[in-house]
Amino acid sequence: MISVSEKAKNKIKELMGEDANHQPSKFIRVAVKSGGCSGLSYNLEFDTQIREHDQVFEDKGIKIVVDKKSILYLVGTELDYTDGLNGKGFQFNNPNASRTCGCGESFAV
Image (cartoon, rainbow, N blue to C red; front, side, top):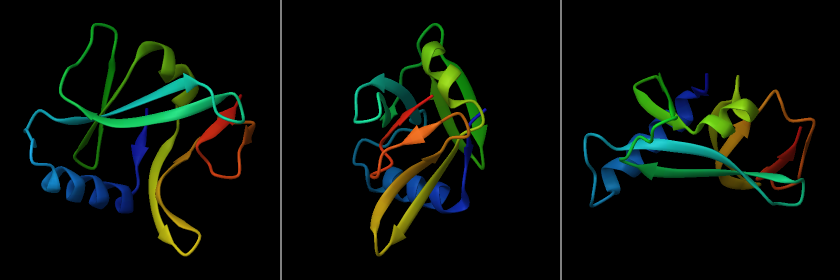
């Protein structure tokens, strides 16, 4: 399961409202890809197509879809949003990560 913080929920809803192609069936797709300075990196995007082996979650009214491979790395992760002085953007609070890079966009298990 992937959860969404209150700040992330508000930002996602704001971005979906600003998207000219907003569709009621649009959701957040979270994936883990090879790469980044720690070995694995997060990918976050809007999508409308659920694929055959996707896992579907919903938290705070936000629909989140994760592919079968990525869910192994993301179980228990919270998607958060920060807008502090050190930068703003979505952050992944992943209890499975043994190491993360300074920017928070890549991790290792």
